[in-house]
Amino acid sequence: MPPSILPRPATIVYRRLPNDVREFPGILRQESESNLVIQTRLTLPSPRRLAGRVIADTGFLAVWFIYRDRWYDVGKFYDRAGGHVGYYCDILKPMHKLLLNSIRTSTLTDLFLDLWITPRGKYYVLDEDELQAALNKGYISKTLASAARKRLTSLIHRIERKTFPPKQVRDIELLDIGR
Image 1 (cartoon, one colour):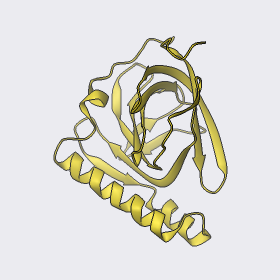
Image 2 (spheres, rainbow, N blue to C red):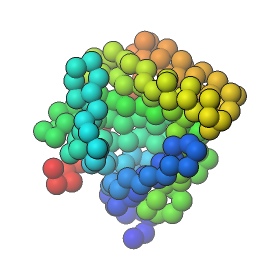
Image 3 (cartoon, rainbow, N blue to C red):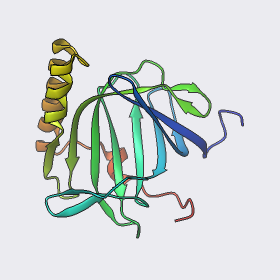
Image 4 (cartoon, rainbow, N blue to C red):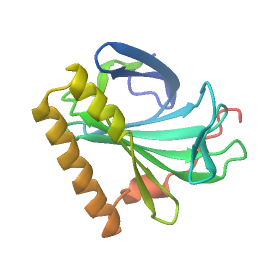
C-alpha cells in the first residue's frame, strides 16, 4: 500500500532492554516528518491497576503519538466502552527515523521510566524499580539512565504547568476500527 494512503495498517516495534522486542499491530492514522499517530487495541496478560482503577486491559484502545527526536511517546487510553481513562507516557531513546518502511515503525527503545496521567492531570511515576534493576544488571548505562530521569522530570514540570500532554493528544478522538 502506498505510504500516502491513510489510515493503513502499521506495527509498532518496541524494545525493552536488553533484547525483549515486541510488536503491536495497529492503524496508522497520521504521519508527518515529526510524528506518527497509531491506534492500537491492547492485549495484556492481566489488567494494569493504579490507585484502585484499571488503567489498561485487553480490549482497551490506545492512540499513540510517536515523535522523532524526542525522549518520549504518549498514548491516550480508552476503556472498552470508549471512555477516556488517561495518558501513558514511555520514556524512550530518541529515534531519528520514525518508519522502517510504510507499515513498521523503527524500533522504539524503552528506558524503563513511565508516567500515567489521569484525565484531571494527576500523575504517577511508574517503574523506577525497573530502571534501577536495569542499571544493576548493566542493561542501561548510568549516563542513559540519568538522561531518562532528566526527561521524566521535564515532563512532570510540563504536566504541572498544564502544557502536557500536548493539545494534539488531548483533542484526539478514537477512529472506529471495529470496537
